Length: 275
Image (cartoon, rainbow, N blue to C red; front, side, top):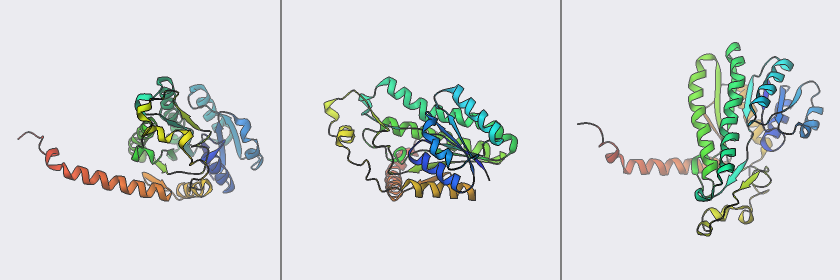
């Protein structure tokens, strides 16, 4: 059995994954900003669930949480960087403080947890790191430029990390979910207080007042959790795992469009070398 550290375990996909991993007999370090919300989860696995207070933007809490995991279970075998939230604003509407907080959570927070668990994984010459991205990193919808940017940054970091740690027996994978029935489009969605009327027909259409997707998404968090757990248990992870029919369709459409556009400009692309 393995020890999983899952950030953002109090709700959504993180909560579903913690429950699934626990059901399979693994130990779970359930990390959340408010560990009181994990009481019932801990009750379902006495001795196998360690709730820890971890705001990934706080370096001390990250260090302390990983140390607790090592003391309780001997180390972290699987890290899942799931903590995060949505943010919507046209690029020009983005609030600088909110945008900085977004990068601090999704990018630098994930880097903190990765750097905290890697020494132990390197020593054991084994481990798995799973970073939750979004199909938004691929399709970059209006109003989601900043969110797409943090997920794209996380994906680039993971791609390099995967190559760096593979010789050490450590795996790294990015997951791009589509729309799942969680709080992402509701309670967990932050919007800029700045509103510019010129963007009402683009980014404005995706503000909460105009978005009716919350609670109707096709993706089932429990099914996603089972797929993730299966992949990690089996090993030999892909660099990218898509989750959801909408993610698969959007990825294919995006790849086809990009391939067609780069092909149309290929002659120009190849004209820039010294002759």
